[in-house]
Length: 171
Image (cartoon, rainbow, N blue to C red; front, side, top):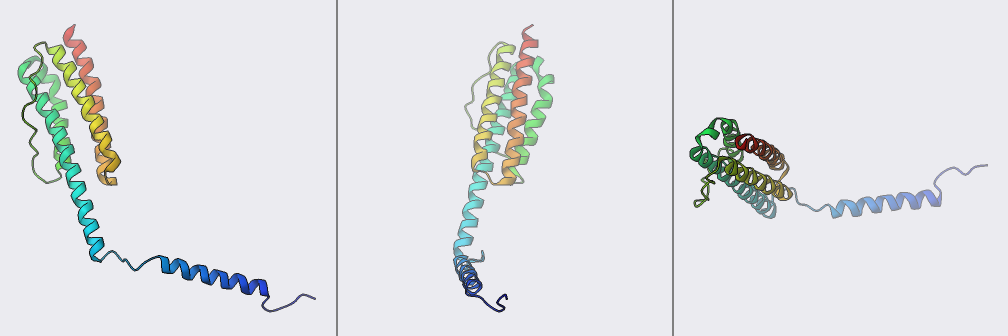
């Protein structure tokens, strides 16, 4: 005949489950996200995201300034560069996200005298910009990381297109 009621094994299992539940609940902490530590953490995260956005926007603005200088120095490249320049303006605008225009750093180099060489230099600049945006992904919050990934991919495509354009101009 089988025993009915509570066995010692069932009682010990139930007691262990209750104890584990109590310990896990106590380890959860009382931080509901409204304390001063949480506010400071959110402010620090927002400041870091803002700084990352500003740096990324400056990278895109500097690349756009180099595109503009090449188009000025070599008017024959202005038409093929126009759609790429428009895309870079959009990248910079998306990265500033209403924070205003970011000015590129002064003192960039003068484009090469040969249009093909200037386009190859521009392709190298686009590759560097892509790499910079890609490195920034490591510390970006998810929404900004998606934007940076898109901008990095676009810069990589620009580098390819500029390399092909340099070949056409040289021929």
